[in-house]
Picture 1 (spheres, helix red, strand yellow):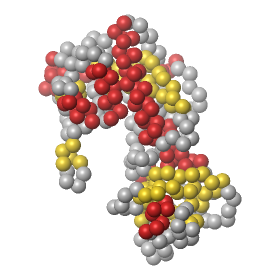
Picture 2 (cartoon, rainbow, N blue to C red; picture 1 turned 120 degrees about the horizontal axis):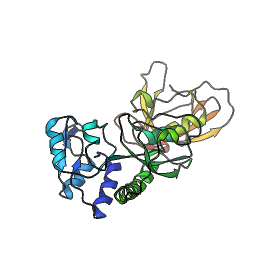
Picture 3 (cartoon, helix red, strand yellow; picture 1 turned 60 degrees about the horizontal axis):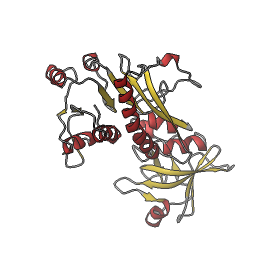
Length: 313
């Protein structure tokens, strides 16, 4: 059960590993883009390519779906980046249902664990397989793999690392369950350094940059949302000009004392643009104007007039 690319890797490794995949469950098709063209999820595309049986329920408690799922007679169910399952679904197979989660549980329970780990400046994350129970992301842990986060990694880089390792961990977990060697650990018995951090769903307003934060916090915030959904801010070029919402994808840290107001832009109008924050500057390396493509800062400045004293708010 899954929808995005992150789930495809695990499914692909199961299929190529010769496991008996009796069926695939993914989200219903949704219209996307300006033309509202129906777009298949990555998991559906792969399932169709492999001629795998497919279910796309609107409601997971729907009797017709539950009966169709029961007819597959699956011994084990695997969930990767999907919705919260009702007990009638996760409790169905004789060997249970396990989930692959992109964090070192119990840290970062929720919908966006990779984003929040990078936003919070963590130097390590990982992947976890765990058995499902009633409360979301709280079931007994089966296996974990730790992965370092480099200071230059953005969400895309960390996502891809975890995706590849996740596919392998799913296979290892399946083998352990089939061989009867699993010794799951309750999450409340696991050692945790520091406080537990949540990973709630990210909305547009979540992505707005607060320039009153430190250089490091803003730098981590930008890479924690890059390339999607992307951190953003309002660019104000004059007192009477309307604010322009810009997405920011890459930045650099500059620790330097100054007397400028927070959010003040410093630029040579050709090659660089930096924003004043309390303990220095955040140098903007790539960004996107509304309706335009993403550009490196020198490319943008060649066609967009910007002067010292403009503001980011």
